[in-house]
Length: 139
Image (cartoon, rainbow, N blue to C red):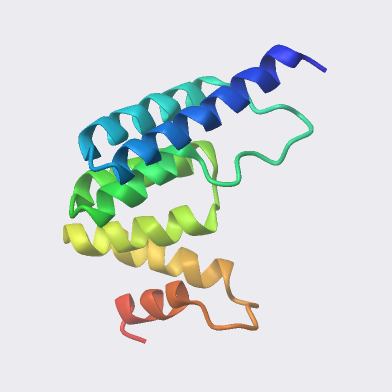
């Protein structure tokens, strides 16, 4: 096993934590910048063959924070970047649906909402993302 790979993964996660800490300390722009750097590093790293991928990709955190701050257009672009690297990722698809909806992109919002419903077709519990997708599709 290559220790360098794992050291890099740990350092990327530490950078994510630094970015979140900066944001929590009131330095929103610095935090977002640090998170974007972590996302870039994560994107440049090949996934190790025995791992399933990141639990929560750095770029998805960036997207969530952008959406939370009201920048739906930028959030949508970040969610789509996550999906290009991690296809069929439930939270990224749900986030993209919400971002597209808030950005006024009705076609993309409907497309992502349909994907949410497809991914959760056999779900046996209620999830807010399912209700959101149904609302977007007029169901």
